[in-house]
Image (cartoon, rainbow, N blue to C red):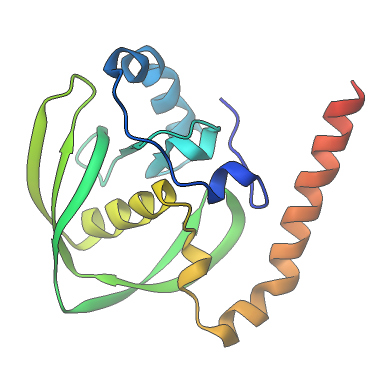
Length: 170
């Protein structure tokens, strides 16, 4: 599976709900391998060109597949923490996220789960959940930080375009 990079339109699309869980199970292993090979703690389907509402995550307690997630409740308190993204290589910034969230989701078999996530697990979930709505972590940056990163983001998008043109010529 190929990680889609900033500028790819699939990263800005709102993903569709999963109705065929066999489809998720069929790519589960390759999806998980891709996430770990890229040293990711999370990977959303749109990041590999699949516009469906699922992601994988590992907060240190093992891999979890999250399908059709819903955030039911959020803390008022927010915590600042550094984030990066496999789709925006080499860029890291401090992002404010809710310190805890109550969530409901299905696993790869369609079974429902409800959990209270805190700290790192809550941060990963919120980051990956954003991907399903076409939102990237850089969208949470204040304008000053966004301006500071503008050149770097532009370089990432230009290198993606060059790679696409090279692939088209083959």
